[in-house]
Length: 199
Image 1 (cartoon, rainbow, N blue to C red):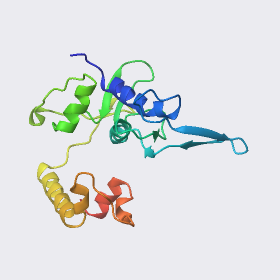
Image 2: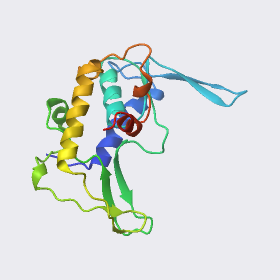
Image 3: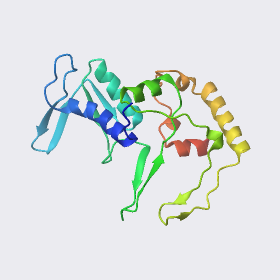
């Protein structure tokens, strides 16, 4: 099986939706997004069926599936790279690279099928056997950060699960629909949400 790095896979997935922004669609392909430039403002407008915000794994997957279903899609990303939380830190002085962010994916069919599509082999790991060393990337020195107490983590996850089932049950359903209006707490950064809920 051909092996690709996660970064290469992200670029391949990203190339599919971004191709919708220009060029003619081939036979059987979704219609391309069309664009025009407002010369007085220097702004470009894009017309398409769906606009996806964020080129992280979810945004790229949604774009890929929408294009498979015949929709023209524009994928917008505010940073200069794709991948979202999957990221690689490259030392500016060329001393190497370190994978950061998401490196572990749940072994569910949607994940396996997507990686299989790009010929990327997954390896099953035992999370209990892993050990961690935290490094402060600003200094390159070992960090004093320590993992939270496992019992506190378990209690917080249990409380979070209860909260999702009782107050936000629609989030746990596949293809959930958010209510209108969306609750303010769901629009804030996730870290703030956790602090507000004492998690």
